[in-house]
Image 1 (spheres, rainbow, N blue to C red):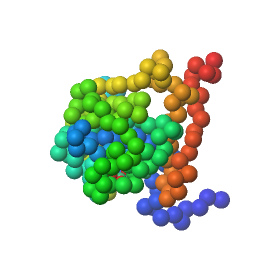
Image 2 (image 1 turned 120 degrees about the vertical axis):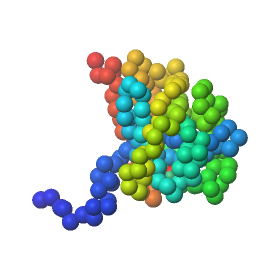
Image 3 (image 1 turned 135 degrees about the vertical axis):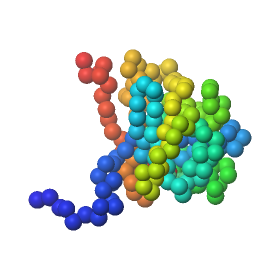
Image 4 (image 1 turned 90 degrees about the vertical axis):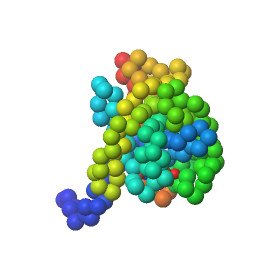
Amino acid sequence: MKESEIDLKTAYRFLYPRFTIVVSSGTLTNPNALAIAWSTPLSADPPLVGVLISEKRYSYEIIKKEKCFVVNVPNFNLIDETHYVGRISGRDEPNKVEKAGFTLEVSKKVSAPSIKECKINLECTLTDIITTGDHEMFIGEIIAISVDSDIRDSWSYNIAKYESLYWRQSKFRNDVYRLKVLNEEEKT
Ligand SMILES: Cc1cc2nc3c(=O)[nH]c(=O)nc-3n(C[C@H](O)[C@H](O)[C@H](O)COP(=O)(O)O)c2cc1C
C-alpha cells in the first residue's frame, strides 16, 4: 500500500539526501559562505550551475550585489565546518567563515574567495536569477576550476579519495549520510 495523504509542501524531502556544497561569496576581507543542498548542473557548454538560495539568506543579497560566487565541494572530513555555515548566518556572525574553521584564499578569476580546505572550487559569475518559489535560482557560469591533483581522476575526481557529503534535512548533525560510491576504474 502506498501512502498519499502527505503534505505537498514536504514533497522536496523525498528528493533527499542531497549532494551538499558550500557557496562562498563577498570578498576576501568581507566574506560569507553558506551550505547548499539545492544545486544542479544546468549546462556543460556553456558551463552553467544553478544554486537555489532563499531570499532570507545573507548570501542572497551579497551574491546579488557582487555578481559572483564560488562553488566549493566539501568532503566527509568537513562535516562540522559545512554544518556551521549552514546553521549560522553571516548577518549574526561577521566572522562566520573563520569561526566555521574554513580558510579563505584568493580565487583565480572572481572576487569571491575560495575555500582552501575544499579540494574542488568552481568559480562562477552570476548570469541570471530565476524566481522559482520560496527559493531563487542563481545561475552561475563557471569560468575557472581548481581541483587538488591528489584527488583528480580522468573523469573528474576520485570519490574514494574524496568522499562527497550528502545531507538529509534534520536538526540532527548525524543525519549527514556517507554514501559509498565506487569509481568506474575500481569496478574494472
Ligand atoms: C546541509 C544544509 C544545506 C542547506 N541548503 C540550503 C539551500 O540549498 N538553499 C538555501 O537557501 N539554504 C540552505 N541551507 C540553509 C543555509 O545554509 C543557512 O540558512 C545559512 O545559515 C545561511 O547563511 P547566510 O545567511 O550567511 O547566507 C542549508 C543548510 C544546511 C545545513
